[in-house]
Amino acid sequence: MAVFNMLENVDDLYEIGEVLGSGHFGQVREVRERATGSRWAGKFVKIRKCASSRLGMERKNVEREVEVLQALQHPNIMALKDVFESRAEVVLVLELISGGELFDFIAEKENLTESDAIEFMKQILLGVGFMHNKQIGHFDLKPENIMLSDKMAPNPDIKIIDFGLAYCFQSGEEYRCMSGTPQYISPEVINNEPLSTAVDMWSIGVITYILLSGMSPFQGDTDEETLRNIIALNYKFDDHHFSMTSAMAKDFIQNLFVKDQNERMTAEECLHHPWIKPLTRKQVANRNRSSINMKTFKKFNAKRKWKMSYNMVWVCNRLHRLKLLCKTSALAGEELRQCESDQEDTETKPASLIRRRLSNSS
Ligand code: ATP
Image (cartoon, rainbow, N blue to C red; front, side, top):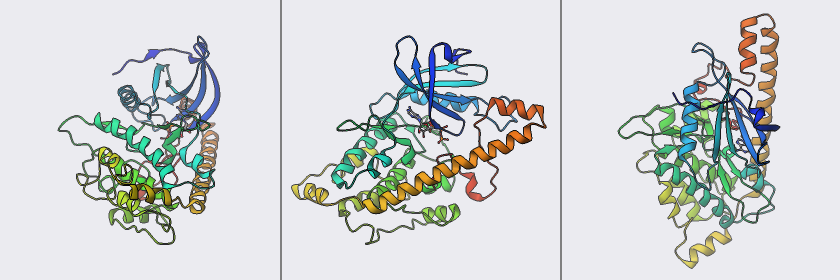
């Protein structure tokens, strides 16, 4: 078992500031180091007290997230500075990422050429390629987990966040896991097959498709329908939404929506695809002429944000109901205090096999 620095009160070293975001097992808050005045993001994760409890995160999963972050030092990946542990929680002190989500940044623009979008895609691929070279899969790539260091900078840096589902492969080992967010997961996850880092490349295909068209490729009316569409590879580039998209961009996506993980483009191969790295002047011109469908993209992003806040309200209501319930049970009350933000739900639909996230936008 990994030992983190024991610190009963993080407040001794850091001044705790505003909430930056909420996750499955806790909050992320801005923190200021008292000794230096420097600003960081503190991820406060409640730890599960006993195996039978459903509240809080299992310690081994926090250890896994920390180990992964410790192995990943790259300009496009959120950095981990320190880890502290108290009786009930672990605090990850992370690089503060203040530019917000990439999709929000893009949605504020009037127009964007494919070349502009490619500059961001390149950085995502560099970060993902770096982790894949270290045999680490992120397993939860989606717009909410792609942020910008500083949106005021002339060329903002991409930062990949949330390594809560990430996994480091040991050689020769089989790893299966039915977690992720329905819209972005690959067929092998749904089919509970052995996974590889290629899972992330499928998600990059989904993100690219949405970025260019404002449409979600496999989205059904229900999660079950979405999962069925993914398994059947049921997607198309309809003329209406892809009228401004280059043929190279479609080819790029097609090479990621490949069922066989071994045949799917790797991050390294993506970086050499002519859409990302054009070889001829004609290819450069095609990229510059093509643009993002801003009208549908803005609509997609507004709907995504609406669903995120809807989920947040749903969680708060559920927490409130739980608190009322806990007034009649001292034990449950103690557990709740130890993990106020836990929100694992009790859905019984097949799609609930897939871990649902607070930021889930399916
Ligand atoms: P989830 O349940 O979505 O997996 P989680 O518990 O793993 O969430 P994160 O996704 O890591 O938590 O963080 C939750 C939110 O906090 C993010 O969506 C983001 O808005 C914000 N956040 C996380 N890390 C940082 C950071 N380093 N700097 C600024 N904001 C951050």
